[in-house]
Every structure is written in structure tokens, then in C-alpha cells.
Length: 221
Length: 44
Image (cartoon, each protein chain N blue to C red):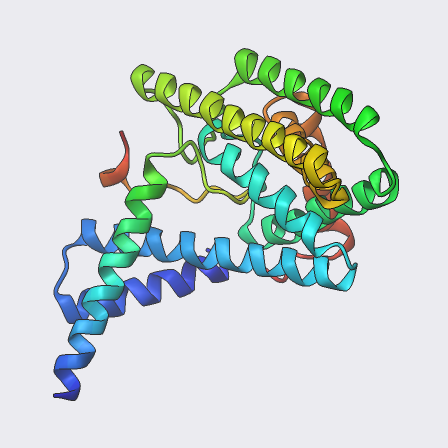
């Protein structure tokens, strides 16, 4: 059992003792606590690395975009919550750094076709693979699968509308941050789409294995 | 008085955690890249 799971189980046991909950309710509270702790730690770690690398804005936009789609599309998973947090910080900040290096002086002429290609790619991948389940949460219900698929397309479409609005605002006041935000949204969605099939799963597996070997995170679990 | 306040705080905490658990159960997975095993009561 991982440290985060131990902490969430302790919290739920204490709450259950006070409120006299049954086993089922205790399990639900423990699951809620684990979700809260894990998501908070992962996001805080992403923010800290983002601040250190001076790419906080990019990291926040990319991670929120990817997480919003991930909620409904599913995707590749790490085998431990600790490595998941470290991996999120590495991946999102790498994408943010790449955005900062390659697109800091990009103009609308290059960004419009680039974003269009990104959105087309995301829609294609969602159509082909979405939703992707995991062994810890298999999705067997056909209706539930259809609902998740539909919501994934809704989320992507909302980001497409946001990007179009940002582009319109850019043509009104020529603020470069707006263009930059469009790129971050596009890359966040592309990364999430990649985790639905082989390339993303391979990168996740590779990073997971590297983290085990290089950082000796097995001891830290 | 202190015990009563503690009881209310724990109740609110439990309600919040239960809400988070149910909100997560209607999605494909967690927002991070680790998915813990879902409790049986939450499986669809």
C-alpha cells in the first residue's frame, strides 16, 4: 500500500469512528480522500516546477486543458501515485518549456494552421480510441462508455470555441498572450490524445520505468 | 460545545469527500495519471 493510500485510509477510519459509518461508506470516504490528496499533490508539484522553470502560465493552461479532457477520455496510467505526480510535473513542464522556446515569437499565420492540425488530430484520436479504461477502473457499461465519449467531444469542442474566441480577441487588441494560450490549449489536448493510444502509453511506460530505475522511487512508495 | 463543533466539521469533511468520490466515479479516470481501485459501491 502506498503512503497516500495509508493516509487516506487513516482519515476515513477516523471519520467513520466519529460518525459510525459502515464499511461501504468508509471505503467511499477513503477513495474521496485519496483523490483529493493525490490530485492536490500532483497539481502543487506541477506548479512548483513551473515556477522554478519560469513557465507557470504555460504549465497551468496545458495541465488544466489535459486534465479536463482526461476526466472523460481516460488514458495511460502510472503504477504508483508518487510516480504519477513526478511524471505529471516532468511532462507538463517539458511541454511548457517547448512551447516557450518554439512559439514565443510565433504569429497568427503560423499558429492558426498549427492549432487547426492539433484539433483535427485530437478529434480523430477521440473518434478512434475514446474512452480508454484502466484495470483499476474497467468501463463495462456500454451506456456509460457512450456518455464518456460524448462528453470528451463536448470538452474538446468547448476548447475549440475558446481558441476561436481568443483568436478573435487577438485580432481586436493584438495581445500576444492570447495566441500563446491557444498554443498551450492545443498542446494540452494533443498530449492527452496521445495518452489514448500507443505513443502516449509508450512514453508513460518509459518514464515510469525510468523513474523506478534512476530515482529509486520504489523505496519512496 | 467543542465536541459539537468537531462533530459538525467531521460531518462536513465526510460529505465533501463523499461528493469528490461520487464526482470521480462518473468520470473515466482521475485527472492525474494514477487510478486507484474504485470501491465496489461506486462501480457502475
